[in-house]
Amino acid sequence: MPRMPRIGSLCFAIVLAAPVTDVAVHADDRPMRDLMANDVSPHRSVRRQEYGHGARSYWLFEPADPTPEVAPVVVFLHGWLAVNPAAYGAFLDHLVRSGRIVIFPRYQADPTTRPADFLPNALASVRDAFDVLETSPKHIRPDHRRFALIGHSAGGNLSAQMAAVAEESRLPPPRAVIALMPGEVLPTREPSLARIPAETLLVVVAAEDDRVVGDVRAREIFAGAIAIPNACKKYVLYRTDLHGRPRLVADHLSPTAAHRGFDTGDGLFRGFQLSRAEINALDRAGFWRLADITLEAGFAGRTLDEATSNGELFRHLGYWSDGRAVERPIVGDDLSLIPRVYPTNGIRLIKWTPDALLPPALAPK
Image 1: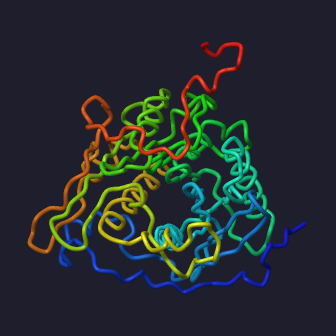
Image 2 (image 1 turned 90 degrees about the vertical axis):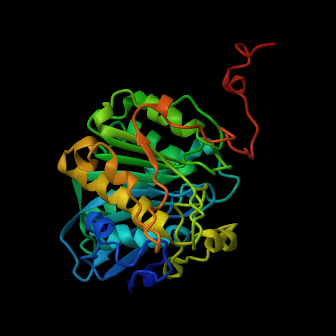
């Protein structure tokens, strides 16, 4: 029986042109543009619809004009309390108009949602979304062979955890996982990231001026995914470049990219998040292109070494108008060769120690 969306009449198509902003790269930078996986979007609009209630609600974004019969599925997991898809709207728009279905789970109703419930909530939303896509005549059919996860901050951590439990949670095996500035609200030892399938491509991203989460969890995720061979995973450290305008600051909010057309009015920090979610070369030539390359490589069964020329495609962010190259990210698979982010654990809002996770009988006196 087809499910009814929570907002019913608000199911509509939004014709979206690419957001127009000043960018740092030179307008005639053909070498960089030629590397862009989706320089011209094949779909002219995005159809969106919300399902569910509370922490287990989610948004479905589907490509339209033209509407495909079948499409790959990307789960996009937001950061802590960044429940309004508008904060990532331009990124979502790029993914969807490039031909992918995007599931955007809410996974937390408000600040009182327990971190331990984030993963179960997100899993329930994604399973329900697949059910809707598979049964409703109004939706594009999901391609189970092309399934991927992208997450930012707390969502970056969730993306790795979801990949580890996908099989037992009745989800398709993820072909790619992209964890952007991952962090934990509260740490947990489960699930083991060693359970992420060996066939999964993994890209973990940190930012040199990330004062919120640092790089501790990013490094844990990269090192913990021991089943994935080095040819299929890359660690990327973005660096700040203040050479010109707009300033390219590699910080915790770099992956956010506002699009008011996706504004749901939700979010405790909605105004702040949207005001900080600017779009620049770090987005277009960085995160979006990184996602395009990784997703297409994963769906085609290629390694990251093959798809990126051993990481080189991830390093090129274009040029300033005076011809100078934008500061190149550091890309590799040997963490000992990649500089640390300080403070390494960021400025945590919730204090914790590993001992706090132990049962009382095992906790040190």
